[in-house]
Image (cartoon, rainbow, N blue to C red):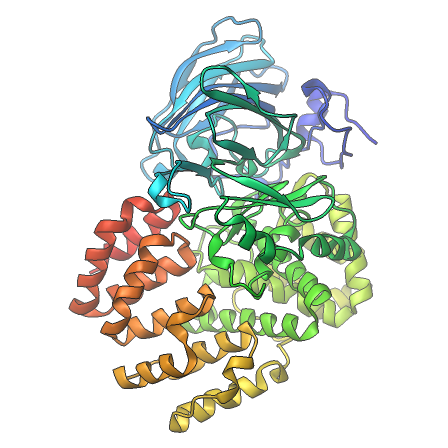
Length: 631
């Protein structure tokens, strides 16, 4: 174990830190370094961490489901550079009642104005420290806090109790926690949360003991995260939920009506954790638990430490969509253990994780499934490059702000194929040794693209000539796909691609469809001719049971195809789907298809969205709002 002792050195350190015993005192907690190179300066925070930074957050908050507010206090431990007199935090919409030091003395503070060109950044909270090293902020987060979604009982499976969940990535947690909301400023944290009975509360920290009955119809729950994490990974969920153990260190939470099915679906999780450890070293977070949330959750999953958040839309009954679980688990190394210092390097989280996910899938489910899922990912890259152009600046892995981000196919899938290409070129043994040391040597620290490039040159490539041949810099900093990309094996989908060709020629519907894997079915539906008549769509549905599938990935592809062809028979199912599911991956494209369908589609989109808009999380709603503003 190595500890840094001097506070000033700690502010600017770049050395690795080791973990500390579970549940340390706040003053004994591990403190991660910050990075000060120009490429590590975060333009999406008001904080000035080189002057004063948050190292620990202690929350004491009450959940008010009637008012849809969170209120209480945040006590912050800070490190301050000699001569610095203030600390700047990120907030968004918080009502600040007062700010005090560790002795309860009032500290002057100001809340700035939001930037006209970046309203999503919220407002800076500047606090005069007057020598304080502990700061307490009493505040209330508003009902429209962008990180929080309050669900009515009608939006839950049980239909009896309300529900709350948070989604902090990328910069939403400042709407309910006043802190330095930047991925490069890692913080330990603890929390005391009170909620009305009979609701349970879970967080992305380890629960400390049993809930305390307060005698007023409320209970208090305590949590601790003793390892420094980027603040976007502080997460909360509260509702009528139960727990089922899966293995000695894994388990799942869900509403009682959902729990049995959810537990069956994620039954391979303990096996996945063991596979991940064989690949890239020990799991460092203790437990790996999950919560399956109501379907309003805007993402497939969120890698909150010790408590992955999952959408119920991945449940298919056959574990065919469990790549999602593998992905979120892999984030326990890539993203949570080593984190992009700035969001322009988000591929360091998502691309590395997508590669790691595929390796876990290969270990647990076999090479065929892994190769098929990799081929689907590569198809996403090709489709994106066709749409935006191979030279579009936003298709570089590192985004320097000069080009618009062009979707997940770059950060996730191009990042995946970058590492896959390097692995296939240098050999799996060498590559795995390199990636493991990358995780080990940068554990609980932020990183940049330049750091990873330099590490590959120093610890993976055997010579400058080999580094040049790998085209490392081109992969990271240039748009498009380098010429040395290792493409997926065409044999992965040879049978399916032949069936697509046969259907395109003469409308032959494959008899083998019922025996195909989920990936094979998706490949078929995503590649058949897009212009279909109502009769052809009806025939497809009758033969393949598309509208009856339990797999939401396949149902989405069916609805997308049907709506693109103005198939009236699909409207009732699409309306039900859009009225219950909030996952942006599904919902936004369906609204886009409707909106591009002229008067027919726009009429349906406007009518459906008027009813469903308030049921979506801010993340989903903002994306659809942009679609609906197009004319």
